[in-house]
Length: 186
Image (cartoon, rainbow, N blue to C red; front, side, top):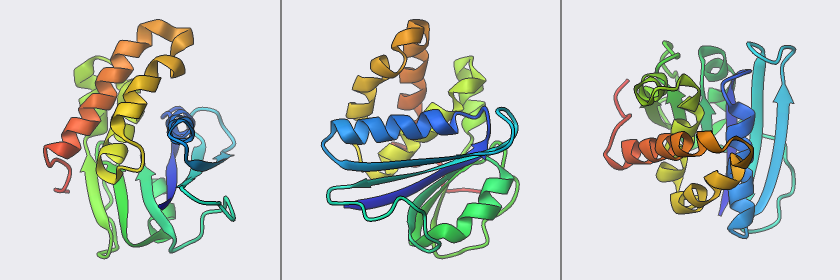
């Protein structure tokens, strides 16, 4: 197995957190991991992207290469424009449909459009959008079992215990969204 995932969006959307959670879960599952963040000029509102590689073998390079990314989690229009071309044919383009009004230009990738902001707002916390997207990613790819992530959410939010139930619920909502066949309509 060799998965190369790009997470991208505005600062404040939980891009860094989402990618760290995937990296830590993959390590806990005994996989090799590379985590390479890139930050924009502003903490909130600037661009943020991270490449995470998850593999059962050695990882030669942490750099994302155009045409080799297996999945892209994009949270806004600029991220779609920049990273759609990085996907390999047949790759997964996971879109936050709530904030993306552009249509993907490629027809050779799988598109999963998630109304993540609306789903998070239904839970009562718009900041849970990233956990919904992470649930969708793991449910769709299977690179790390969702049960591993569910078990580790308590560790990730140990310093903010009151957020543990919300994040577990948001993650589970993303998993169910994919398992119930959502997201294939733009």
